[in-house]
Image (cartoon, rainbow, N blue to C red; front, side, top):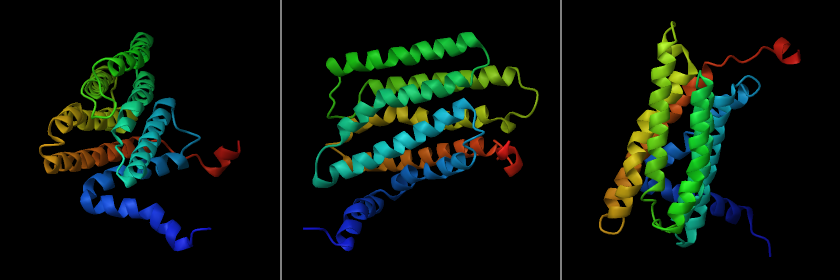
Length: 237
């Protein structure tokens, strides 16, 4: 027996409608990733490697959020998805920031740390972390590494830049990451502490998170828009 088109539409969109009513700002935050992704698609032939990794991170995170949404529609816990995605997000972000470095030694340092993080994640999962709960250690450590890489990128690139920093993609990527990951550093431990005793406060915290991730996505959009779209003549050559 086949489902009617109305049943299919309800199946696809009812979870989105529900969550948009419960947490509208968080929902905007999730779908705001589509804006820089769309801008990147138009520039896909010209994007430098760091921005390609930024777009991969945005697309993968959007897919993760949507999977979480549909997985939980029957009441199943979806927190394990956050934990499983964590090392992949760290790899995408690490490769992005490695590509933004001017010196080879700093690219090597970031790549080495990026390679070590999945090992750290695995050790935490096998010992102190609970895959069915908000991550208490792995997400904060990932956020701390991103904050460090973003701050270091700003310091190093600014030292060797004579033009206004706002004309460079690395500035918008790094500042956007700082705005978001400073908050994300505390979000999951906070959520784990209060998810049962004060779920409404946790929802509010995730609404704030939605606003900050939207801000980061707009900063990353600005970074992508600095990449010129090649003309048709350039595209043909």
